[in-house]
Figure (tube, rainbow, N blue to C red):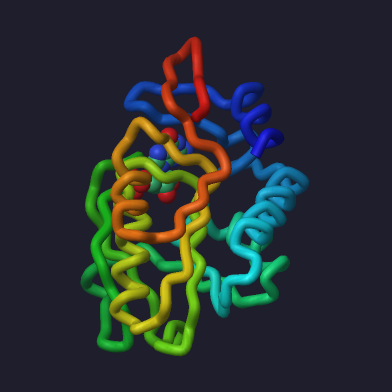
Length: 189
Ligand code: 5GP
């Protein structure tokens, strides 16, 4: 998606630990006109597939998922990061290792909001090692719902998540795939 790539080149900055900071337009301050185009593009890429719900993980995925859902006219369910002590029986749970903070946390979704009749599109801001997406996939599998695919805004193609997800046969659409990045240069696939 050219508009997104141009914006990453203009406003993205590379931080130690192979972290791309895009907080001026995507995941802190949010450029809604751009995210609206992102939502439209996800709709174009998954149009024709049966999708009954969009699922994401808090916090950065929520805004993007909501704008995308306006094109699909379906609800958004976001997985919550939780304390193990608070977990009760009416939940799907999994564990996810945070890329940016390193620690492992529990992720939960209420059983009320996912059922075997659902067809799920996963949406998130970044794909790096794939832990966040694999956690969401695990929850979808536990619920018996059908996974229709995953839409990612920025995939860091030099990290292993994208390959792992594609190798599972999952329909993965990333709007910008970064091949390499340093403080002075960034290239797309
Ligand atoms: P993964 O689980 O695929 O390793 O990492 C995905 C999650 O980590 C995303 O939900 C995102 O919040 C965060 N993340 C991974 N890489 C980056 C990055 O380069 N920049 C930012 N801002 N977040 C990232």
